[in-house]
Image (cartoon, rainbow, N blue to C red):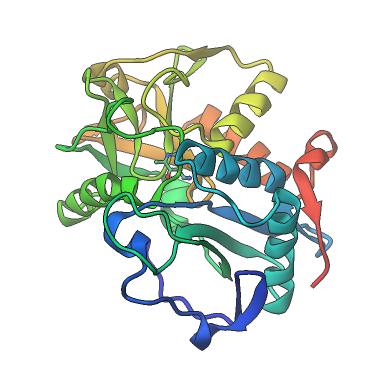
Length: 309
Ligand code: PMP
């Protein structure tokens, strides 16, 4: 769900800057050619009211991995950017919300291969359930996209690069205009890979299954958290591709993402999945995930970076 964004301050190139002044030139290289790397991170308030960022280190690690793939020299260290996330949350007095670090090539030269100075921004804003509260509870309706997920040698699927999101944009708009909440993209071999901004899971006969990291998916941090939680709960796991029709025949399906959290899928291509509601394993994993992000599960406290507003 898209929302209008306004905040007090954005961290830009090392300084907290008023929202209105956080601007770039129209000849910003990235605006033309799409080479920026970014992250989506969430902070949650615990039941006791203490705020913490969920898996901050892993997200900043992935930001640097994305930059490495694109040979983008980051002008800050991972520690500086972790601190920038916390500082921006504090500057906006946000005890819960979404964090968007973005590193991009600024203005100067143009031409596809021009390498301009790298600029870095961190914005934060309050963001509720990405696929709606209703979707989180009851599940969403999804459609297999007419657009395929990029082949692993067409785009660098392991990176969160802005330009790659034109693929997601096409799929997401097509699904929304068709009356669905999200798209599911097949890979170029025809196997379900992921949503426009989420990883995909199915449950069949008590086994949890998700496409493997060797396929054309983003290595989702929520995917990793859910797999770890499932393992700790003793749930059998298969990281293997599955066919489109095994998605139709699944007992349960759900999507994971920092924005989407753990969202049940109740229908795909007009076929009801299981009972057409959030299934029992989905509910169990969703509850455990929310407990983890909110600091209610001691064994996952290592995933939290607490801060004060
Ligand atoms: N796939 C894509 C294409 C995404 O954009 C995202 C969101 N970052 C995900 C999967 C889920 O990743 P994560 O759980 O790290 O947010």
